Image 1 (cartoon, rainbow, N blue to C red):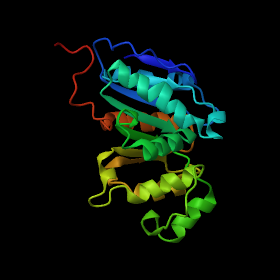
Image 2: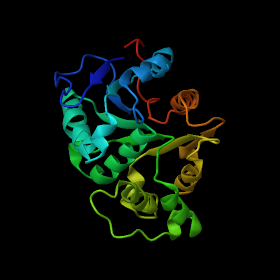
Image 3: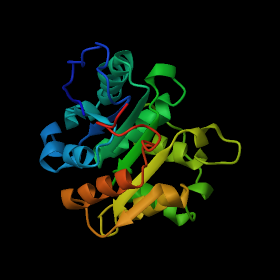
Length: 242
């Protein structure tokens, strides 16, 4: 497994991949989180223990990048494009809390953008807006019955909900993008998570005991790996005989 550390303005080398994984997961931390948090909390160890053909990019996405939307440009220019150039065939976004919102919003903006598009999203306990937003959606029975307001460039939470409203509609193009949600049942944002879960196929949702904390996110990551949410089962395990 290759672990890339990516800071704003410092893209990974576009050098060709060594033999091994052709799938990359870009991990985005929550507000005030760091790339090292993913190592400390066993995200890389979980991949290694399962001998999965998966590399990780541990992104440094400070909360300051969110105020003006710079996080989306960084994702595209410093992560998605350079890692495609390295030869990864499958690139997933894995975001926690605020990083989950960024992952969803990026997918909503770039799902049809060729090399800039992710191949799937794992949203772990994503922040989905304040109670005024989620309450308005709940008041009409869920996102299917909700009418998005006129959207501006900075209306990130509304953009995500508008995108989720169309997700999985019969004949809709969004059915092609794999999207998985994981959350703790006692998470302080779980009301929004349940609304999002209603917009997804049941097999793409994982709810576990726990709150908005690392032990819960670690359990979700392990559970989604065991479910093969990233579609790795068709690729040989690392270290397997040729």
